Length: 207
Image 1 (tube, rainbow, N blue to C red):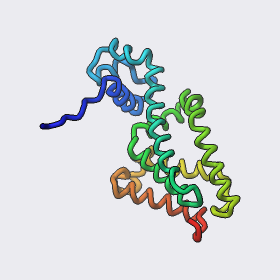
Image 2: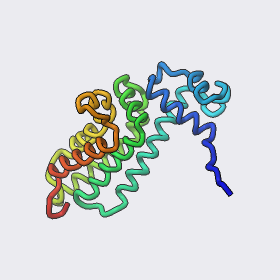
Image 3: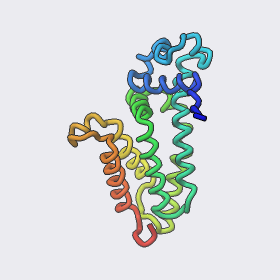
């Protein structure tokens, strides 16, 4: 007997299409009618699931954020000392952004447009993770397991090294003469960033 996988629910279809539309066209240029047409439902059906465009937009962003938190929790489940844990989190970040290219574009749009999600909700949600990462780095530096740097600046450096490569993929593709989002190119970028950061902060004997 053939077992068929369940089709995505209407709500999940709306979220997936909305992420793509908001990432491509921005919040202001995307209408609920556009999204409903792309899903293949009436606008009234969309409003049954999400009361407004603002509610839908927040649901799209926050759903992606949940995936990121899950990856961080998975990455920090192992031994909590030295470079090893830092590397696991960096790899989780690459994995998340590589698997969520629309979210990368959405975040970049939010940053450029000064959207309320980055200023308000996402800041509140990300701040505990940011401070947790900074506290970990500072503790490991205090214990002599990582070289001394400004922990918060180090986190921002890692964030920029990952996100800017993926968000600026068209430009980078022109500079490199290859598809920057191909598997070989992504792997090369991932290992390069990890190697640079490891050289900067890891203590060889305990990394």
